[in-house]
Image 1: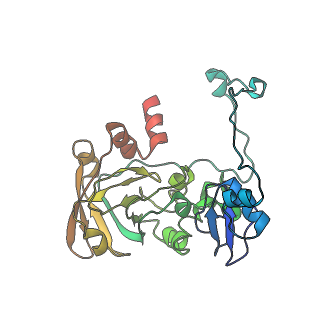
Image 2: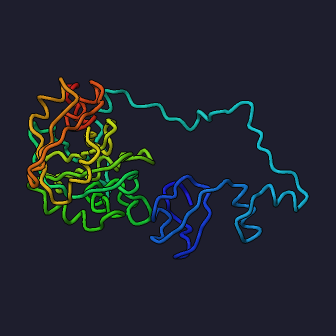
Image 3: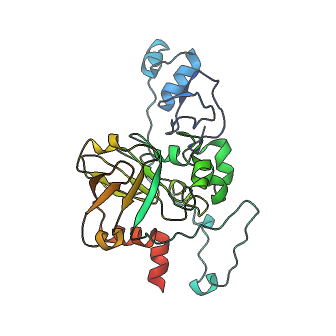
Length: 295
């Protein structure tokens, strides 16, 4: 099974050894999979014995030397396979050829100054990009079809999310994340797929209420952390959150106040965005910011 998680799906409810570095839930093609990562040597020894086997033990019992990998002294590159890029002036006049399953990138709007929207989803800690935008045989055929791929967003966590997100199109919505949100595979689809206009009329936000102030752009969203450890537990799905003066504050300060309109409470969040990241967030993402710089 390759990194993308297609092929050789394990039997339901059975353990499976894999040498590829992806063991996210359901990634192998079987929802109830139990995938365990191991070395190629362990996989080969286990395949020969039918049980999980330490290859060093197998080599000793078989009276064989344990395999040793010798890396080449020099690696060559076949330059005949490289095609030089077009002249920048020529590129301006090239019309991309798109098949029926290829969509254009969604237009990403700038971050509004005032945000007020319902919490559509509250997730726990260590949410991976695979859980935000899953791979596998069902979703991968739509990697170039953003509106269709969006319908798989967060389905590993809550399969009702895409439909509810469409219903919240007029107001936009907020995702509340825990610690280490967006870890795992570096995948642009986790940033782009949850953001089509059909999902949110406004920029979607991820609020991370946690005591440790960590920040960045995860899944194309601004994330932040609270100074109070209990704030995460006080937010519930369907609560309406309000953040006022976002644009005015982000450029000069690292703290913002979030008001829970439903519960009539407030808490403070802070970020550690670099000046460049602040510009990206305010523009609605890296692509819109680069487009603005070209003007």
